[in-house]
Length: 198
Image 1 (spheres, helix red, strand yellow):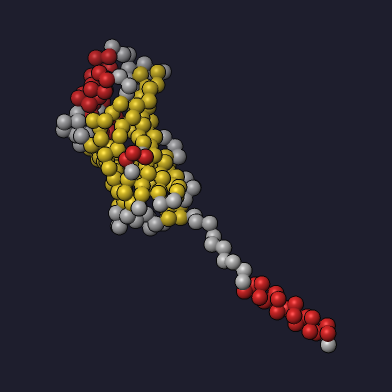
Image 2: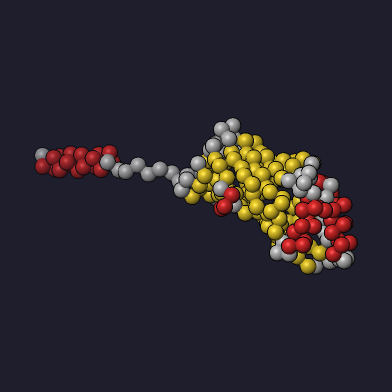
């Protein structure tokens, strides 16, 4: 009889423990891209140029603004007049001869995002780049991180942008001649970090 009582008591204890086990939420592996605003002060855009075939230099451009709306439409604008090459006269030449900022002040990235996007895992995103009056479809491999109330998007691999795709080759030819260089490559490598906040 005592053995039966002890067995029932033991079984009851097991049930109590099982019922009071804390629920552990599975690790967050995706997010819903709705209603985010770009923090320009915490976002970065850089591109690498190559001159005379072997000399590379990194330059930056500031973001003007951006958002992800409630339809998961992503829009980001880069202010081309903010281009910074660490040489003032070269900055002005890029604004006037290459980007022609008086006519084309912004570069715009737009994309229709999926309902769920993976976190901390590289994936491919399709987007349109509107630059110098020409819009082209492109792809990038990116990675997302959720940090508090912020969403950080970075490129996992550099994005290749080809000048001829956006009618920028004429401007590059002018820059090459003015600077007395042998060549400036028509392709640049672009890196970015986009920080959004709810």
